Image: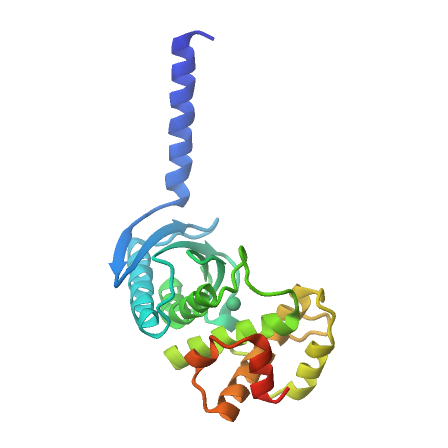
Length: 251
Ligand SMILES: [Zn+2]
């Protein structure tokens, strides 16, 4: 190939890449919240798009959440990257929003495009609690990469329970719409008897017997019981070991 052709080919690839990039990354912005810098990447779903107002509302809620979080648990990363995805899945049970802490400085948030009342309503109902929950994971070290904890549903239940109870207390709203009227002592017994490599999806997601989020719900129960028994608040307990929380809960 001639030099000029290579140049044109290279430029074409560059233009195509840039075109694709701005399709899924509608906005990147850095804001200052105390000592924390935040970067946002927005990704639209196949069916729906974030409006400019949605993106503004999301940034606003996340900024406020980080500001509150920083006072309670200041060991946040100095800069946090938020990947905000719109998904065409029903997330009614978790108020329209779910998330994942990939790294101490990287959080993925998924919002439902089909939430009743629309994307704006999902932002109002579920975003702050999900962000509190995921930020809690980043401080405790319960992240997808560089996770500081051993394998086991018993461990996952406590870490998720701590994050759920913490978020619940900051927002005065339950993390999910699932029943708490279940036999938790029996569920604890089950979880404690599981092998360390028990199926994560079944115990934290949908169990073959139909139960949902057994680990999350049992974890929240254990954390609340530990708080009641010890008189310690959720922030203090968030720095305790898994074994200590079981022991404070009486297990
Ligand atoms: Zn979690």
